[in-house]
Image 1 (tube, rainbow, N blue to C red):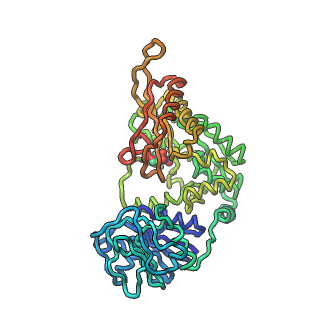
Image 2: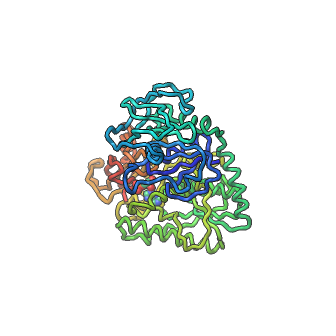
Length: 504
Ligand code: XMP
């Protein structure tokens, strides 16, 4: 039994699915206009969204909605849509409510079992339901008198506020009440079972096949490769391409962990000279990204052919799947992302994506269950083109060495002070700018290094980390004292948007 969350475009849709999974129920997000199999739906949730039910092109109920006979939780836009479709009225944005609001539970309802009558909830709406459809009753009101919750006691439970958001103090309990008390479901989703089932499934699917993977040492590809390795052992060939744009010592660390500790069949390809050669004289960021992506594919393709591979493992995770479903509908490419690791369709390999249905936190737990060391599982994201997009301007061997050294000082200092796991991503960027300084009695003329550290949830938006001055000071002094070639250190205080996380 799965819980289906229909996405109407709210920024919180993924969060609904995550909370449901954390409560122990398997949930999946679908687009409102997507056709799906409905026989195993245990409960349905309609998410919030930015539209107004009166707009001409407003998203409607899914085509299959009338065939589904189970219970429905409508949140925000979901509530308004159900009310509108069943003959109620929605009032366009006269009384907007944003942020924390008080509601009063005015009538008993299973969804509020063991929840005090006065509650703090998170609201984010312009429109609201003015008149409910027939046979519905109001179960909670906001302090402005708006209908905050309602039900028909049969099929529909409606909430104007967002139970999935942390600021709704008893939000998780409300969702739990809906699933267990209203729908009568019991939790049945846990990751140990997922791992066992997935390994059995992969054993069957890949029996006798030759499977290949590009293993970078990033969280997702690592977990995907170890999972497939548990299923088919030596028949999975993991290719680790050392393009020279990796962080300090990674070219030794990744083979040590995966080959020596975890026993994977891994080959390391030393392509450092090739990449450096192809990148010589190139300064344009997009051209650099394209070159790195293309060379990576070439190197990898050769290995796949030599090996006679028929299948390719990829570390796609659930947020990638949801994001591409979303972005299919809008937005231009800001950067040619995922060009590295996103291997081409023309390779004619069948794709194996064992983590396709998991969120990042779940991928990490699976990694722990599989015995992958914490240093890999809790590692910060690293872009496919690596240090190539962190050396602004031309990439040279000398600059790579300087940057690796400085970056590792930053990371080590953050680890030492407990800040590494508090930030989403921290790194150093080498600028094509030299600045005057003084060393001893001598004039110096060295590179400027930018430190960047950001807080983020999925990398889509980000804010710069408020690292304590003492830590910035420690990092700066360590770098200036020990990295030859750097004469000045600055801290990047730009949020995304408008800046991106990486500099190129
Ligand atoms: P931006 O710079 O676009 O980065 O704000 C958002 C997140 O994506 C990572 N990133 C990449 N990841 N291939 C990847 O796999 C890429 O080409 C790439 N470029 C950026 C970046 O590190 C951040 O976590």
